[in-house]
Image (cartoon, rainbow, N blue to C red; front, side, top):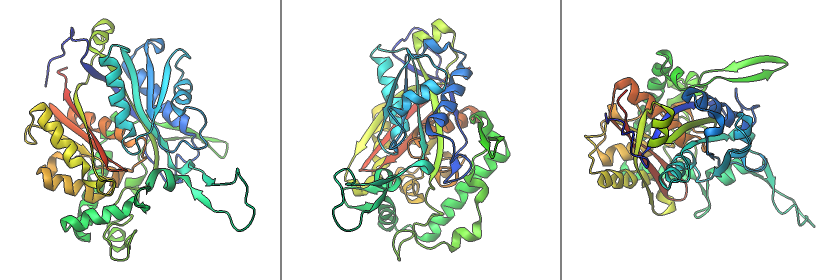
Length: 401
């Protein structure tokens, strides 16, 4: 672990983290408006840090499915969280990388000395994504109109090849010879790790319960919903989801979900002046871009470039969080980078916990920090593949208490 250097103003630190539970598609959090989900994570993060609301310079939140939500979802979430109108807000859309890109944007603002304290995060309500009636504005003179699912159209569809992202999950598996059993075995282990973490109360350290009203009665959601649905036998019996001879199924791919996560970023000077106790330093970040149909492999090069930039090795990194958009994505990265499985997604990943697309980048960073604290690890890397052929990776270093 690295010491906290109080005088280094351009170093950026993570001071506090929080996330909501992850709800299943049309499940426990489906009726909670997106800005309210985001506000829950923001409010809890700021409360943990014990900083004054008006000390925060900006809220930056990732969000992909913004249709129907209203102007600037990040601004709505900030105000719902009780932050004053003087706090700026920005919404970031980088598909599945949105929640990690928001952290990078916040880091850059602090490094350029335009901010000292920033809440960065991500939020998504896939359950609330509306259907679109394209061309309705100009009118339909004859024939049928088509309702377009904005969740699929804006979040899960490759516009370049006109295919669902899952088709490329199948291609990734085929390239490496990952069989259906390989992927199901990986998925089952992800579920078992997540269920074990839940049983041991590990996620309680990062989850803030979400309150809601159900049939005029108040209720509270405090646990991730997907892990409780796991059934090993059903996992093995599922049909291929995207092609008749494919190996990706609804069970060994990530699910559709609702949730939000946030972190508080601070400069070294702000930490010293406000006597904040940072959890970690953000060391560096990389983005890698390639052919859109091979977004599944982009994390490999994003992590390679990050290791080279820092002169780190896989052996020298204690823990990795690589988003499990598909089991094949994590399997490919594990294979190419030779990451020991006991270093990768140790509390389960998106296959088990869920993948609210605008939130997941921040969620894996939050969980990485939780894991590093509990295992007393020094170095960690979080990485997310991104539709369109990209990936984003962030390296962090734990701070001595």
